[in-house]
Length: 107
Length: 123
Image (cartoon, rainbow over all chains, first blue to last red; front, side, top):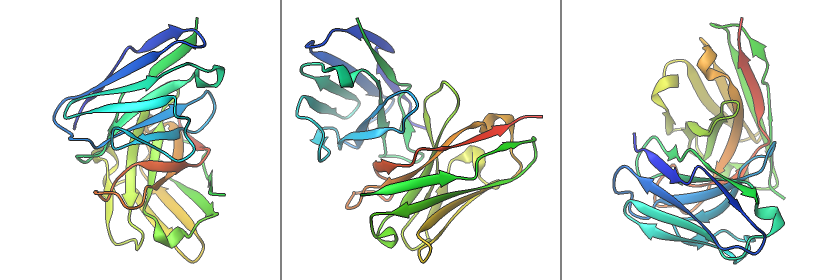
């Protein structure tokens, strides 16, 4: 199985900060990488597909980049509703696998 | 509005069985591939199974092969997961998740998720 490693595992930041989360795949996954946001007690929300494409309705402060094995999720100016856990997800190889999550907390 | 409502979770003893259901509305169910994804308490996300829109292509993760069976009823707009020979490590919140259409691969992004149904395997 392809291992997905996110860093950091947790992050404290303030409203208005620019934040970057990284995701590294154990082998080349081209651009078959998605990002999700999950708040406590809620289902995951789909944010970005194929590394850099914003899902409809997702605010433009979210962006994604990368290809091959290294990917990033950037939030340009944190809003109060962005404090959540973020997961990357590869689907280039079966089984699809997720990163362990990055918990974004209020400083 | 797309809605996925998961149900059927319960407390079950090791070796027992459960059948999960997911009722879909707000979209043409028969046009979309579907998945089950689970999340153990306090842990991350883990894909479990996939079924295509016609129900003739199915995939499972290795740890559930031979024990779980995914199925769908496109008339009832419903997805199912029959879970047999349950183990403690199957304890999780189980989500049904819609597959994104138009993707390069069969198993793609999960664009809508249910709220989940809790399966607890314990004696």
